[in-house]
Image 1: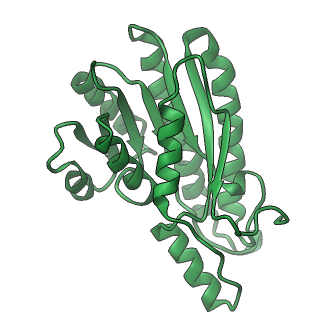
Image 2: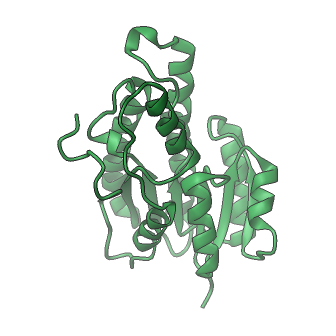
Length: 244
């Protein structure tokens, strides 16, 4: 059988990297999209089934060129893991620089839009038609952390994107789901942990990032007739229920 294909944004580190490595280990052909070419090449080294796609998700031209290169290499796109994101500055809304707000919006909403747009167009036109988009939301798509106005606002927008893509994709066999991950041990979560320590706040429980990667693989590996619309995977004792 021909190997299935996935393109992962934000693939150079954190959840994206862990997911890319798991998919490669399971025989998928994997497109690795992020800004850092050196880190992408490091992941791809020794894998014939990996393609480095250095690109900025906030640049429409970059995104289109990366998807074109992926299609030329892989032949089709079965799954997009729409993962690239940034937390941005912490603080109450009056403490946030508008330029910083715009940057978080550009990555977490604009980048998600551009990658989903590129994937949708190719899935709609490939033969056989269809595919799957998995958006990386967050527990912040449901309940906020303190001082997270930029991140929380954008992650609520991702939920709206997911629902709309699910509806608009039906005629073309394009499924869309969202994974909301809580406290996987990545550089971003470690940074939040250090901020909490510095501010004298409780440090939250975390989980191995591998659990998040396995959850994405489960969503991606479903047959076309099935879809995980929303999945929450998190550190068991983190304060999600009761938070907000």
